[in-house]
Image 1: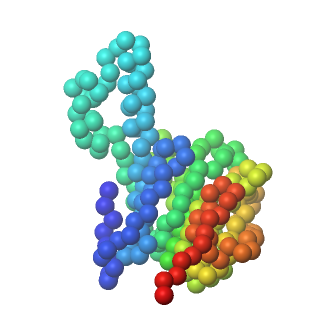
Image 2 (image 1 turned 90 degrees about the vertical axis):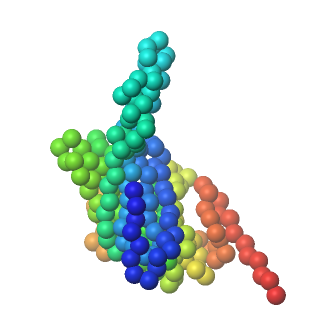
Image 3 (image 1 turned 90 degrees about the horizontal axis):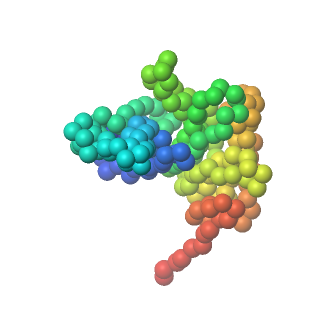
Length: 221
């Protein structure tokens, strides 16, 4: 997969995110392109699972066969690539898999974008299905953060297990976005702005891990 640089910014700064279930890897850039790449790894996992099952049952591992070696030699037989272009995909920060609260029986994912700009964009990604060979991309939230330049984006779970988005803008406190409605099948606000709360005294935070935010600063005179 390749993202082509456009405009003045030819040195692309890429961010990667892998879903918790290991099915998909997403790649996007800070600036210089509005394209995002999604690598579907589902067949790779299924291939090695079958290989292990064959070996466990005393059979011949798939990778040792001629067809297996051919497929492993060229991942094109196992990996699928999807691409999507939109200005609101700039500044990719994080991806997460959501629980099936809408009762569709299908996997859904959320992408968090907006690093380097002032607005956050949360996208819905629905993988392809036997009846729909192309994935579905949709920007479901588009709203201004509490600063001019977003520096950090991630997803987390609250102490109650609810999904939250985490954003940190330059010189501002951490903002927690309430996304639990995404897993409960609730209607989204028409304003495309989820409820939020700002965490005080976190202006110097550089990362959030579970229930903890880490930060600090250094100055050279």
